[in-house]
Image (cartoon, rainbow, N blue to C red; front, side):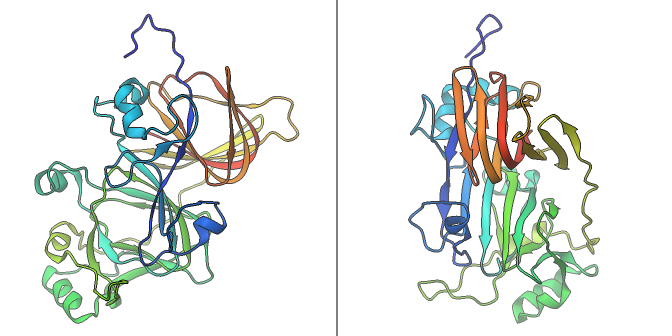
Length: 334
């Protein structure tokens, strides 16, 4: 542990993701983001995670080869004010490639998860659409208020889709999905997801699909109906996007909630003699996920080359850092 008399020397480091081969996944994460993982299909990569179901691994610096959980257990001060001493991040960052529709699902909130799921966190999440096929859509709640009995019946007889609100999806869209919202990512959508560090998903409807072993995937109807918001959902609106410019880099807020804050950075120092500063939030960590382009993160005795798909963890009270290159990045902190 550091104290007030200890000089700060917290250096950023690259992360290597864990992959998931869910049946609805495709090849975009391999082909477009250079994710060299031996999984087919590659549905998700957990880019920044300390969750037991898929902790990411440090890929640069003195802790290379250790899991992020192990590093944060050794250095809880890296999380700043968000440290609980357990080595656990409060958030999880993923890339998701939906070649096919995901199941219609819902996530519990913190209160339900704490009492019914052995003290787990709930799951509120945000999606940033990296790419979308023509006519791609997602499911976001219901057209009209639903009664639990009607929803149960529609799930049993396979007619639930007529009650679900479908929303068109376009590249660069942002969607905030609070716990309790019935939702599904649609086929042909590539997404960066920022969420609470939880893997609780209550599957409500799965299009009667068969997995590679010839079985239907299990549903979780009782718990789903316990937590689902049955009120009609308003059509999700895109947030007002206001760019703030500094030399070499523009930024815009995408989402802010009590669990995380997400900005998009547009880096272009190709014609600047001055590199862009990365200002650390007060007493907390931040994560940079490169979603296009490439560049270099510079600091004292530190230089990290990054490319599309790379994820960088910056500890709380990190050494001063600067960016150079041409890239778009999501910056996440909480």
